[in-house]
Length: 185
Image 1 (spheres, rainbow, N blue to C red):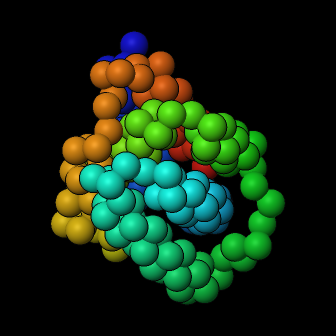
Image 2 (cartoon, helix red, strand yellow; image 1 turned 180 degrees about the vertical axis):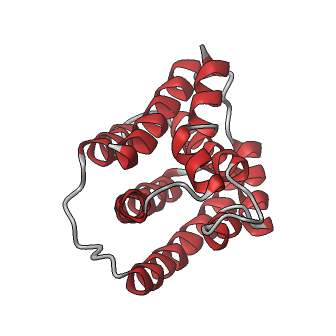
């Protein structure tokens, strides 16, 4: 099941359309606005996770929090350039993903670290699959696949334990698929 979910989450039709340049601006902008909402939720989750994390995970989580603050600034800049109002209500897929983050706050720290790694790993793999020098969205793909993000995901992998939490891995992947689906609805 996990292999099929990883494939569905990282080679989704939304990503193919971004790579091929066939995604509509409306679909991409809907996704971008919702992703900005999710990143705000992720920052809150990650900051609280940092507060309870074991010492070996603190550096990577602190760096991740700083990167998420910069990411929100980047979203605001891109939204302004594209004429997107980021003050939108969260769509059901965004709400559901946020509810997972809230639920993880009561989970064991290693489970929350694993979920965070899966969230970031699937995102990196997904955008890597969308890479194309001809895509009109190349700037976005390059941003979400840069070497700093790759290093961050690798560092999270060092403190995660996906083997211990296979059902949580599957749950995160299912949310990611629903998030891509939401953009195409």
